[in-house]
Image: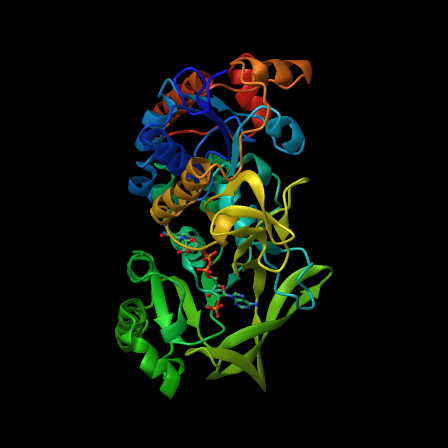
Length: 462
Ligand code: NAP
């Protein structure tokens, strides 16, 4: 019998997750010299592209253009796409282990972190993940009861996700109506009565997690004032020293310039608050109505930066009917794959999945599922290349000899058929894609997404 990795017996790799990190892993495998490989990409949704479709803001179409690169990869004859197949529900890890030499998990971080404060469970308190998924037409997030009839919202955290949420809430809905934003979200934003959008950072200007480009864009939303309080820009000694970091310096300079500009009295206000932490969401009749904040002091964290600590001075933001916590994403454990509870992602050592401290033979992880929710889309390229290099090194060293597996081309389709699972192929996705573009053209939009899986399958006649 031929050795794995030869033209007669290609190395069979399953990549679970078809977001950026999954596609970059596929790319690195296809480019590996002297190796014949077959790659099957799985996704729990009928649609590929992960956060590029379901996370990137609809007014950031240029970023979404990266899908052309992924599409080219998906059309490579060595690659197959199995959409609508959920690991842990439709197929088990064991079933994949019996059919692939190597498994690469690219499942991202699908949940989010909590603040752990009283009132967090009140109606009107959501994660930014839910709101982002809702306006992006992600099937998981179509039924959240967002109420945009309140006067003020508070967004907790000041990373780029928080900035996206603030911009979408402040933006003219007619601008968004031309994008691929879900139709229901455009309608809700047209009816929105929100006028004050609080962005709450627990640390200071030098520790802001947003990118300079994002804060610049937010400060230029035509119908909103971006308000920065000069008294919250004072730097302690450690923060001052931290301005050697180019991003921190640019953010500090931009915020200083914005604070000097002052308010121009537009009817929407984005109010940045720094060195404050929500300590309670206050409610009436089970709904959020206000946020209690504690002012923070910054103290050295012993690692060259600062951490926040409460000062015992409190204030209340009244009229807040909606709170979006945007304090970081978190992975969801999948049965059979070791999970690092503390880190909130798959347990791994530089991309090699580890179980009780030892590498799990032939199993790897990329993207947010490997390192947690950090970095831009492009960050995933180098990250996936590094993991695939580890896989190739292990393969070359004969570290984890290939198991006896069923390498037949129809092994997985047959398994899925036997289990009554109907996968969506890439050709079917292309049909959905064309339908979405056509629906969009009909209403003057870039694209009108199918936001529910049954609608996608019905459109495919499946
Ligand atoms: P993030 O960049 O890690 O920001 C998380 C924010 O939450 C930080 O401001 C953090 O403050 C704050 N935070 C954490 N725990 C908190 C708590 N208990 N109370 C109050 N604040 C808390 O995460 P993200 O915004 O979710 O973004 C994830 C990744 O996606 C990032 O790499 C981001 O750049 C990327 N992304 C990029 C774009 C874009 O380029 N347009 C858009 C969206 C997302 P501390 O700093 O004090 O911890």
